[in-house]
Image (cartoon, rainbow, N blue to C red; front, side, top):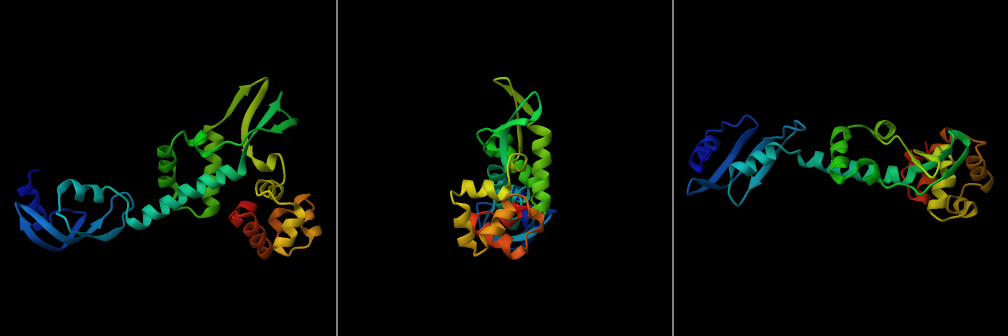
Length: 228
């Protein structure tokens, strides 16, 4: 619609997703400023937008079609969490004749190998950003299981798997952080024998006391949820 039509529609508050609070500075059929409540279609949340350099149709529509500021922040945080989760917990493993006893860790993949592009990763995040951390990790696992699959290379079947298939998680995270078992015990003030029991599987990771899990994750620079 032309500027005059749009100006009149805004002035009459005729947009379903908009509640006009204030308008001012009409110039050449354009309101030069104002404040409006906008209901964002993707998330259904409402927030207030202050316009200070003119209210134009394309800009107003773009706000309606976009997520609210809080959801955009959550989506961005979800993207970063997924990147970290994949880069810390997934590896490529080579199977010889599908025999689990013949496996070796290949070079770890990056998140782009799974999602192919930032656009696809953001699309996944938008679909799952409302999940809690545990639910989100499960959603990523299912996505990788369904999408990535296997490939053949040098006589091996290469498959992307969780690190648990090839080694203990704490051992894996400790190796990536380049610290010894003794150093981890000192940093966390947890007995060396206790750390050893965790890594050798004598104590299940799911049985680690919350305080110890927090200390270990902090020392290794990972979210505590990564331990389970």
